[in-house]
Amino acid sequence: MILTAGFVLLFVALVVLLWNVLTQVEEKATVRASLRQLEGYEVANVRDQELLKPVTERAVQPLLESLLTLGKRFTPIGYIEKTRTQFSTLGYTGTQAWDRFMAVRVVLRVLVVPWLFFVFVLLRPPGLLAIALAGLGAALLAKAPDVVLGRRVEARQKEIRIKLPEVLDLLVISVEAGLGFEQALDRCVAAVPGALTEEFSRMLGEVRAGASRIDAMRNMEKRCNVPELRSFVLAIIQADTFGVSIGRVLRSQAEEMRVKRKQLAEEQAAKAPVKMLIPMVFCVFPALFVVVLGPAILNIMDAFKGT
Picture 1 (cartoon, helix red, strand yellow):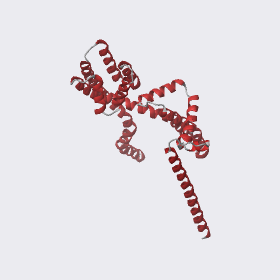
Picture 2 (tube, rainbow, N blue to C red):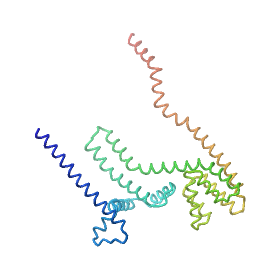
Picture 3 (cartoon, rainbow, N blue to C red):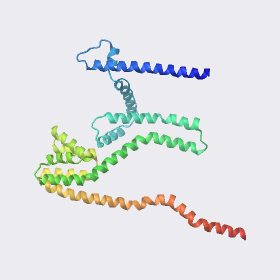
């Protein structure tokens, strides 16, 4: 009874202490928010000036910068350029997403050591199972960010490849209705949301910022790295260079992209039987053999026992 009462009193004391701490934190946050809204307010104390900043800027940002510096120091330059290009393909214009990726990559690689300690010291599975668990966990922690990033890049490129014929059809209709090429692109951006129209919007932004249309389209092609989009960009550049009708080029490109999309679907359908072969061999056939040959094997065993 006394022990129970002691636990209850301890719990109440912890709750009261936590309530006081949270109340003070909330009051300080309210005061800091009020001070930020005052124009021309100056804080003489350096510590108070630092406390006026958000928590993310005071705590998270320095940690992120330290991890980023560590990641750059032990990362090849070619890999850095490759990942920057991949983030550009995903549509990230700034460096914040890439910085977070490098920080997460460093943290996961550091966690390899605790994982090995957990497997070999704490868990201690028998035999080769320990080596398999350690290797699998280390590989996942080391390669997971690169695999996830590569999958996202492939998904975005696939979306661009699939959406391109539809967007080209809309471009053909808009240009033949009397709109200019850039106005037709604006119409497509407003009507068809997706990765492709985001790249078109970014390309139009570069043109309006002062870049030439050829340079902006080449930059878009390099960011996306899609063969079909590269063919479209080259056709538009040639039409601008030689004075060919944009509408005629767009119509021929739309027909070609539809044919390529059909061929891509046929290619995926042709790969399906080969991909189905592995689960059939390792999952379906063993069960089928057990059902079909199991009774025959039992009968043969009984016949040999009888003799």
